[in-house]
Image (cartoon, rainbow, N blue to C red):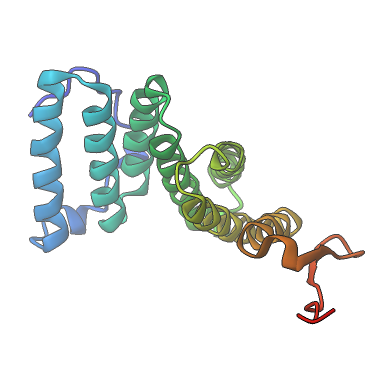
Length: 196
């Protein structure tokens, strides 16, 4: 298999050697995703390329090859951007934020520059996803995206931003039933009696 627009694979993007030889459903899924990517590369349609690369990334994540997953997701996002389809871009941005957060957690014990860089990428992807979330087609999915990104930011230690996103999601879920809380969050309003 060859990938014409493949970027060089970083040495830290490879999966652990012990996992590389394992036969498992995850490895089979990776082979299927690679075959789908080869097919997509023949046509080079942005949507098919974006979907195929995102699926490759999911397979790499299942194998804990987070660097390879992140590289695939970055390429998937590059293919998704020209489409103007917010839903696809937001899904990839969420996956990027989750993947780079997991990379940061892997490197957290060493307090390394790689861990810090992964945290910065996580925040960038998370805030970009948050900015696009209001443009997705399904308002219920917007809520799920906000809660998903909130979880990632909480894992990064950005608790205030995580709470702000949870509040935004609650406002979308409950609308007028929520009143602004003086502490900056949201509080449920007392229900208005039906006969008043």
